[in-house]
Image 1: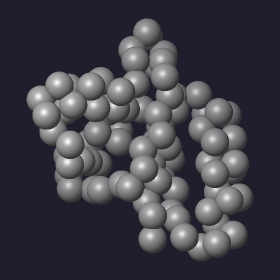
Image 2: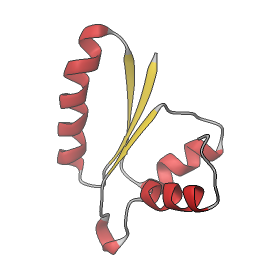
Image 3: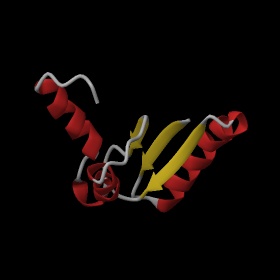
Amino acid sequence: MVKIAIVDDEKKTLEWECDCIGKVVYEKGEAEIFPYSSAEEVAGKISQGEEYDVVITDIEFAGGGTGFFCGFFQYALSKGIRDF
């Protein structure tokens, strides 16, 4: 089963994203979707050992912050980390 985390600080957008993706994956029973309203929330789950196959994030969060995972992946790639 594929685990998909979706992160968006706008509730209506998060619901829409989950609905759209859910229609495709639930029909086939191949994925589980985990919605999160902040990068900190999903980062906390990951630091506790939770693993996801796909993480979809908002580009810009309220307060001007950018997507947590965009920054994480840029850092990992700059350090030569390819297995994440």
